[in-house]
Length: 271
Image (cartoon, rainbow, N blue to C red; front, side):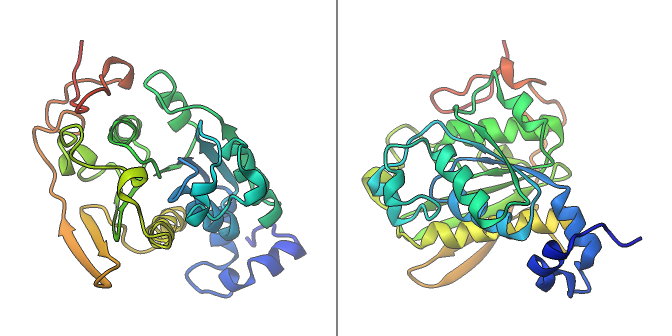
């Protein structure tokens, strides 16, 4: 049966609808998909922009930060007039102006052990667009325990990485059992990042989400793409499952993020 798309939607999504691998049924699936984006900064901005344009029907945005002028070199959904405003508010307005089909849930808070499970459980797919290891581990654990697929991305200077964890393969802790020692990996504020780089990585993350929503193609599960903008080169790195992984392994250490510690080097521990 032909999905119930109105004339404006048939026009808006016409380039999707004429594709045999998407069609009206695929577009209807996108409109029925709910995606949680953790972070509305460098990676979250292009993710939100392209997921909204694609017609992902419901977007959740988790961020407790405000817009700073130094963000505008790469965080393309915020403008100069947004400086000082909560990022979730400017993100919501940007999406509403781009595509009125999309509902935006704003969560002006930091993802934390006491809210992660509830937030993740409300969505079909999660995008890790965070910029720190504690949040990355928390996203991984909450999604893995809930069986919710998520896309991971990270950027640093001229380099970026992206992969997807679907729940039927390795998880982020298989790739990084623990965070590097404090002080060994500088953040963007101290090391810098090429402004266009988050756009490249974020678009790859958005592509993975759209494919998951459509049920099309192969995801990056079990593979990490490492992108070097300086050399314009992409390496594919295999990510094997780890039998002793504390979250997805044969004998997981905990079954709730509320019982885990996300301080220091982010080693998973149970009380």
